[in-house]
Image 1 (tube, helix red, strand yellow):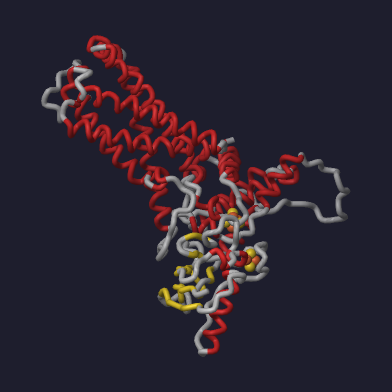
Image 2 (cartoon, rainbow over the protein chains, first blue to last red; image 1 turned 180 degrees about the horizontal axis):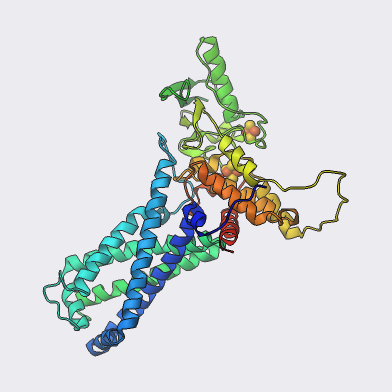
Length: 219
Length: 246
Ligand code: SF4
Ligand code: FES
C-alpha cells in the first residue's frame, strides 16, 4: 500500500475531517445552548435572581470574553466547514433526477441547510435585542428581566423566537446524534432517541419563557 | 398486466438525453425488472429501434452490475433487492415507472442507464486489499478470528459495489461503499497492519473522485440491496481520524 501522509492539513481538506470539525464545533455550541437555557430558566425565580446572574457573569470579564471569543470561533468553523461541504455536495450531482423520493432520512436531516441559516439570523436578532438592545426600544442595560418581558410582550418577537426554537430543536435532533457518527461512535437507535429527548427538552424550556410572558405569568 | 415506462435515453456521454415513454402491454408478474427491459428491448429491436442499454450479469443479486432508479428510489421500492431480483408482482396494472440512471458527477453516463463506475474500482485500488507475501497457503486456523468480528466483517463484505448508495444520497457520497470496504478488512486480524493507512488512502481517493460528503442522513442505508449499515461509515470516520491525528 502506498503511504499517504497524515497530518492536520490533509485531514481538514478531507470530507471526514470537515465533518469532524463540524461535530466538535457543534458540540461546543450545544453545550452553550444548554448553559444558556439553565441561565434563562432563572427568570422563573424573579427579576432579582436573573439580574444578579447577569451581573455575576459581567463581573468576570476574562471568563465572559473568553467564552464569547470561543463561541465566535466555533460559529465561524461550523459555518465555514458547512459551506465548503455544501458546495462540494452540490457539485457532486450536476444533473438531478426527474423523480426522487426520500427512502430513509428524517425531515430534520434533510433541512439542515435551511434550519442552520435561519437559526443564525435569529441569533443575530437575539443579540441585537437582548445584548446590544439596538432593536429593543425599551432596553435598559443590566435590567435583563425587564428587557425580556418587554420584548416578549410583542407577539411578533415571541413568534420569531418560538419558530427559531422549533428549528433549533430539529437542528439539534439531527446534529446531536450525527456528531457521534461523524466522530466514529455508532449507536444509532440509542443516540437518535437521546438526541430527540434532549432537543425537545431544550426547545420546550426556551419556548416556555415567551409563552409565560404572553400568558401574563411572568411580568 | 400493463405498465407504462418512462426511460432515460441518452445516445452517448456527449449528447443530451431525455425521458422516453414506452408501453409494456403483456407483463408477466413473475418476471424481474431486468427481464421486463429485455421484453421491451425485443419489441424495440423488431421495430428496428435502438434497444435500451442497461447493465446486468448474474441476475441473482450478487454481482452488482445492475441498478437504476425506479420512481425516485435506487433499485426500486422493495428493500434489500436489486433490480434484477425485483419482481413485477410488486407493481399494479397500469402503474407508471420512471426509470433513470444513477446520477453523480463521479458516475458519468455512458449510454441510457449505463454509468461508468470505475471511480469505485479506483477506491478499491487505493487500499481495499491486504498485502500478503506469496508462497504456499498458510495453515488453517493459524490466525484466530473472533466470531463477532467475523460476522461483522462478513456483513460489510456483502457490499456488491452496485452504486445505489451514491445514487440515493442527496450529496452523491460514496461513504457507505468506502466505509463497507474499510470496515470489512479493518475488522479482521489480517487487515490490522494496514488498517489506518487504508483509511487514509481510501478516503483520499473517495474525495478525489468528487463524490460528496456524508451528512449522516441514511438514504444510502435505506436503499442498499445488501443492507450495509451506517455503522461502517462511523468506522471509516474513526479509522481516518485516528490515522490523521495520531
Ligand atoms: S454499500 Fe450497498 S448500495 Fe452501496 S455499493 Fe455496496 S451494496 Fe451497493
Ligand atoms: S445482475 Fe448481478 S446483481 Fe443484478
